[in-house]
Image 1 (cartoon, rainbow, N blue to C red):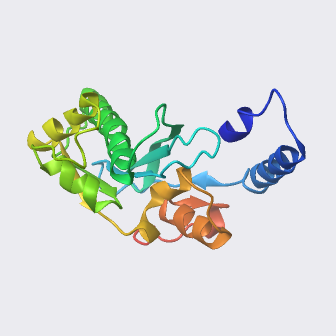
Image 2 (image 1 turned 45 degrees about the horizontal axis):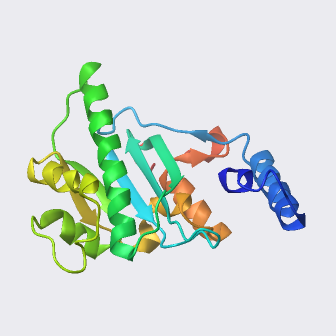
Length: 208
């Protein structure tokens, strides 16, 4: 819907077809609900992903992130970046910046309501270059163009508040928020998010 809203002033037939597809999806998932596990760890786990120049009109990238607590999602976001990135590493690293901010906010909020947790918060990403860059205090020719405002990620990693870990793209749930996926992959990810059609589909607590 966010993508379709960009063409609201001058929609065409492809946009109408896409809108019908979105409405059909909404209709088919209205009975879905998120399931949380009472005996699960309350420490948030994050996933982050960015495409690279995915918008064909502006060449801006789209980033997405999601956090899971007690087996189910509590926060998720999909946002088109506001500048053109010059590399995949930069696009992913800008996503790191936003997901780090969200992780710190979630950690502070949970602590304020009496749910202190161990640190660092683990965030899974599928770009080794960006992960390595978050651990490296020096910039080199391939990363010197990345804006200074995004380098606070390195500070949070150094302080032990955030820990980025690699995960293959095929298992990165945040892909749901950055690119179109086939039906099978969507079903796979929604099951990992404990998003079920009705109570009869919910597995045992230990399996969710």
